[in-house]
Length: 110
Image (cartoon, rainbow, N blue to C red; front, side, top):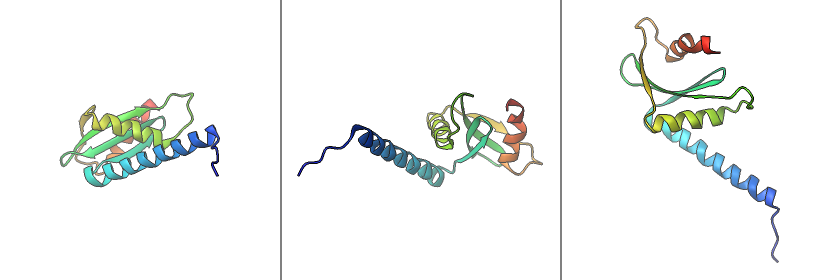
């Protein structure tokens, strides 16, 4: 017996499979390349500590009219990071946390 799948159900299943694949890519990047993600308002940062106090950073900016979805921000920032669209910033020696540094640097953009 052959059952016909509704087009919306097929589309939903395909989107779910894509999102699952993207989540695996994020997990792999975290485990294999030591990247971290940090969201601050409309900005999502993908960063890695390059040296003792130097950060490699890429970012994604959400349009004010779009619904907040952390997954999309992470994927966009990771894609930019993987494409070497990064900047290097040196943290002051008195700051130990990259998240604190990013908050101080970018909170005025909020």
